[in-house]
Image (tube, rainbow, N blue to C red; front, side, top):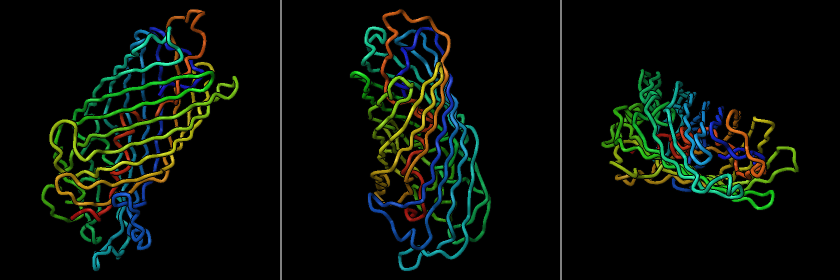
Amino acid sequence: MFGASENLPFTAGEWQFGFAYRGLTSNDHYNGVVYQETRAENDTYVINTQQIYDLNVTYTATPRFNVAASLPVVNASWSLPAVQNQMGELVRIGPRSEQNASGIGDFTALARYWLLDPVKHPRGNISAGLGFKAPTGDEAVTDDYALLDGTNPSEKPVDISIQPGDGGWGILFDFQGYRRWSRVALYGSGTYLANPRDTNGTSSIVAGLGFTVPGLMENTVPDQYLLRLGTSFPVAKTGLALVIGLRMEGVPRYDLFGDSHGFRRPGYETFAEPGVAWTHGNSTWSLHVPIGLVRNRRPNPYTGAPGDATFPDAIVLFGYSYRFGGAPLPPATREPSGPGAPSDPGAPSAAARYSPGICDGPANQR
């Protein structure tokens, strides 16, 4: 989010180019906060894999104001074995049917403003951001896959969780803050993506698996959010920083603006987020591995059906950024600014979009 703790304040005219990677596999099913052990025992679980490669650029117009843009590339798959409902329990009756999707995701742009002058307040600050998401990603990628019982494979839209785009324009709200004491920094950040569009016209996985459930036959365009809080500890003067934090990401039951019809999997997951960041010259490398703590698949909006969803045990986040240009810093500001956690791969363009709670199996198709 802020670069490593040895970074100096950004100056007018400075650029930062970045690359980020996010990878996860989800195959543990939850109904509410209850782990669905029978899905693993019966080998009827969904396997959802997601890889996101994010390219981003930031321009600092003044020390207090910057603009950023991001474009992700998505590669994902969703698979489920042929199953049959026997006395209320899913039983495997055939091989897995896999669906795949890849392509560019939704473009985002964001403007941030530091409430305090970073030059005069290098030890602590808060920024507020406002931006938009453009529907550049395809929300209707199709693939050949079978019905729930493994029969009649045909070309249909893939699951909502692996679609590269969501089909709607969105509004981004963002805040970041940090406070440094000596060589230790506390950081916090949050991003909320509000999607006013109701549904996007793409048939949901409910229809793809052969169900007819009123209100769930078309994909929704859901809101998403991401929250982070933690501490960074620089290691001597090596440019290396250790990061220990908490993370929460998810999809709400109801959107902030507009209606919330259609198919969605509301829920959230919290994580412990250890990581490292290393800054050398103008380059910063970071690696975070959020480890799942609490998973909660919330009831479907309007219907109240509990459903279930798969959640990852861990996420791999890798980031690299390079900064250049800008005016030279006055001698009085050469002290490191002490920001907190390094850049979050996929935020704000994809970190919340591909959150846990949206990688679902068929148990909620009722």
